[in-house]
Image 1 (cartoon, one colour):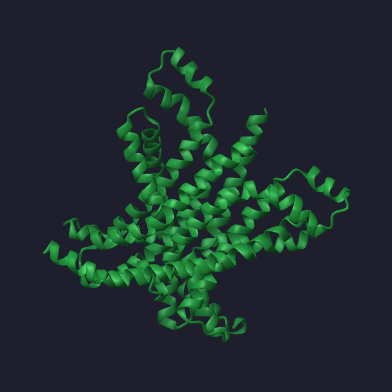
Image 2: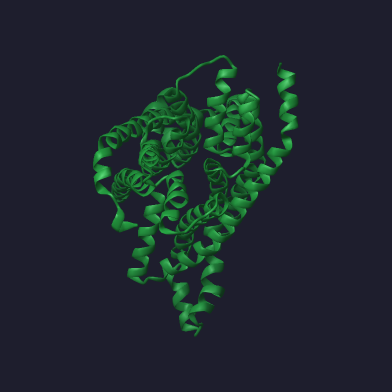
Length: 219
Length: 222
């Protein structure tokens, strides 16, 4: 019986590989867009305008205070009521982009605020424009504080992307869920799902640890 | 949409929400306690001199941290029966949450233990305390004290993660939103109410975390 299930599992391997592609697509696009938005929002938040900082802070609290599953349901089920119809894939990408932007914004703002104010004052005194200050003085120094938690956050986001399987995006988790309906060997099926995620996330966790020890020594 | 927002429906479903809210609370509380226990034991194993114990703890932590909770939940939910172990949904859910959060707790507590100056441990050895006594009276109380803000942060994550238990049909907050949505076709009312309840828990835990952090800084400066 066991061998029979194993054979069936091997037969459904293409489904898992397609699922892996979908996981890569959702988390890749979501994280890329989230990184860009998060950096912009983080820089603005560290900028010091009270009202804008407050608004960004409120958005961060809303996103950090609610489960990703609920956010996904809100985007997937409520936006159509407001006249914006989204398929499962764009809804998933939108939800993950929003989530990554929120967390990355916090990391970036924290990194920028950790740069000593003397650096900014010196840059101002040297006559650098606001953009030049950011690009040539602040961001390069902030990067050493930003990078390790950023990579760690990427791992969390890739794992969070498994939740989008709930609205019917066929990612690795959904592939496992579909397979387990035919092959009732949950340990085997979700063991495979786990191995696939592990093969993506573990190297990234190691990278984050290496970055942390390297950059701490450097700073 | 907002002008059509139906507060009467929410009032009608409020008892369901409150009931589900308490379920979320106790599921999270039990899992948090379990995670703290597993985390403490695992972090001690990870730092012990025994290679084997350190290795086992390492494999546990890394494999949990590298896979999503949803996959772990399904692994237990669909996998346990094929081992011949039949657990109720609640027990499966608590088990998944506990094992998941335990790995993160282990890392948090390990960082706390590492932050204790070695002078304390040496003083403990000099006072004639054995390993267990040193852990129990000197190291763990301080390690857990220092990490309380971070542990509360992890508790926020745990409460949010408990929303995934709705997928194995446990009646908790997210499930209440799903029920309202499917019975009355009102996703806005259903899920926004759910979100408000989660935000309530979030702000309380966030406040506690900030408060404990202030207390810690105050104690260190004294």
